[in-house]
Structures are given as structure tokens and as C-alpha cells.
Image 1 (cartoon, rainbow, N blue to C red):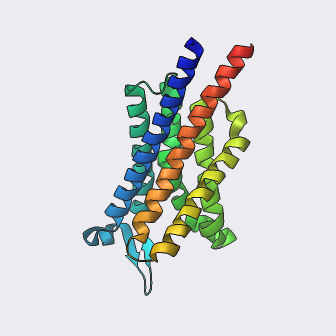
Image 2: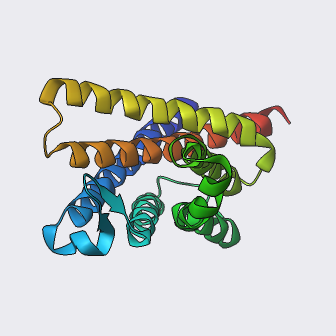
Length: 214
């Protein structure tokens, strides 16, 4: 009976963790889209070319900052509501926060050098993959074991693919209108939040099973 109650509480807590990370991810993505789409801030976030707007360094800094705020706020709420029982050490939290917060600014800073060496493949292929790899490293830092990096990479790619699929469906249904930016970043930030929260839950379950069989 006590075990059934404990399992029910764990399921409720896990759903709460998923919900909060999903919510804060979507909200932070929406706020980022709202920020960078304001006409009064266009010159702050973009260069103007003949046909396109090219993101400035401030754009990528804002992206990482909003992503970090969304993940940090979700984790803080989960801790405050005691949905996360095993708290993460401050050293691991700060390290993961630095990885997430510096990921896109550092990659953007490397772009001119890397483009001169490998061409535009860096912008469209390598840099996004390195960004997802850094998010995977942050997952492993949070859980305290870097040996899980290969699995974390697959984990992150899986949720990213889900996000891209959802965006594709939304664009097909609604069309590529002005709402695309809001849909894109809200969905991507939400799926990253879902990736982090589900990883935390999986690691908790894994550690509990290991402790039970030890």
C-alpha cells in the first residue's frame, strides 16, 4: 500500500516537472521571439542586407540568456514545490548554466574563423550540431556523470527532431506567416525544456533502481 502511494506521488511529481519545464520553455521561447521581432530593436539584433536580416552577436546572446532563464526558472519552481527531491549541487548547476549561457555566443564568435576554413557548412550544419552537443554535455553535468554523453546526444537529437516536426506541421497548417517566429522559438525552447526535464526524471529512476538492487 505504501509503495503504491509512493509510486503515485512519484508519477504526479514527474508530470509536474515535465509540465513546468514545458511551460517555461514555451514562455521563454515566446518572449525571445517577441523581443527580437520588435521593430524598435531591429537594428540592435540584426544587420540589414539586401534581402535578409542577419543576426548580430546580441541576438545570439539573447537566445542563450532566455533559454537559460527558462530552464533555471522551471528548475527553481520544481525545487520550491518539492517536485525535485534530489537537489543538484551548486557547482554542477553553475557549470551547466555556463555551458548553456555561453553556447551560442561562443559559437557565434567562432563563426568568422570557421567559415573561412570550412565554409558556410559551419553555419548551417556544424554549429547547430555543436550546440546540441553542448546541451547534451550540460545534461550530463547536471546528472553528475559525463560517461552518459553519447546517450545524452541521442536524447537531445530525439527531442530536437520532435520540435522540428511540430514546427513543420504548424507551418503546413497555418502557413509561413508572421507567427512563424513565435511558433518556431516557443516549440524549440519547449522541447529543450522537455529534454532536460525527462532526463532528470530518467536519471532519478535509474539511480533509484540501482540503489534498490545494490
